[in-house]
Length: 258
Ligand code: DAK
Image (cartoon, rainbow, N blue to C red; front, side):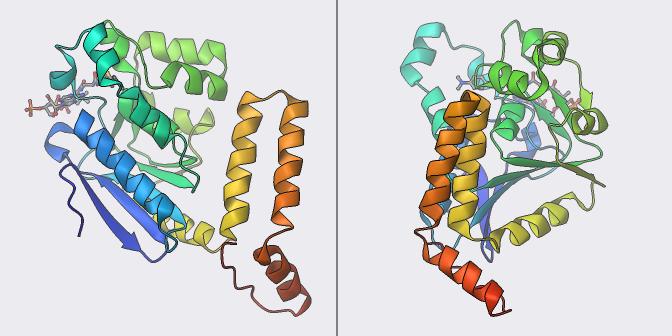
């Protein structure tokens, strides 16, 4: 049992699950909830038993955006002083893999949270949008940047300017969603994948995440250099010795994570 107010955490073997849990307001993200998500992610990040993090929403939605009631009275100075983006930035620095299981609405800050996941599994009923434009604001937790890197400028502008609901199908065909499942199966399928990923050697999983993320930001040559360093690093791990020895001995490897 956890002491959180707006989320629930539970563990399924090596998978740490974070449930967004404000179903009455479609899991609208207030400040305290974002802080709790960060705390849970960082706790799982430190927990050697946990190899993969899975995030999903309770009730009818993943998350319908930042909590508008809480946001309405903010001004630029109060936002700067709250420095809440620091929590979002730290969520983006979690080294373990994060899988998002999305059903129902995934809007605004909810969509930005989903874009911080490494992989996204979506239910057929999922709806993605950046409705900020209808509130006369704009995405501020990475939406304009991450969506553009994934989709390119023209699609990103279309989605963010229109604020339109994007179907699960379109999100999938645009490449922001890895797989689609029926709503009743989505969480179990995402969990199944998370468990499969948790069997892989954790240090390799982590260094691959780091290297792939560099590909998004770095020019090719710098990215290649970074990749090579991580490649060398893995040859210093016990798991590399174990993985190759197990192959030669025709047995299942026992990966320790170091
Ligand atoms: N905030 C607060 N309450 C929300 C909410 C939200 N984002 N979304 C839904 N709710 C509440 C509704 O007010 C309603 O509450 P009651 O009236 O029952 O008390 C309840 O959830 C159920 O919603 P509806 O009755 O509206 O349900 P419908 O099925 O009719 O409509 C809807 C579902 C998702 C289309 C609609 O609720 C809707 O349009 N929701 C708002 C979507 C939206 O505009 N989201 C916010 C985008 S702006 C930041 C980081 C990030 C952000 C900002 C700052 N910093 C670090 C500073 C992000 C900003 C955004 O996300």
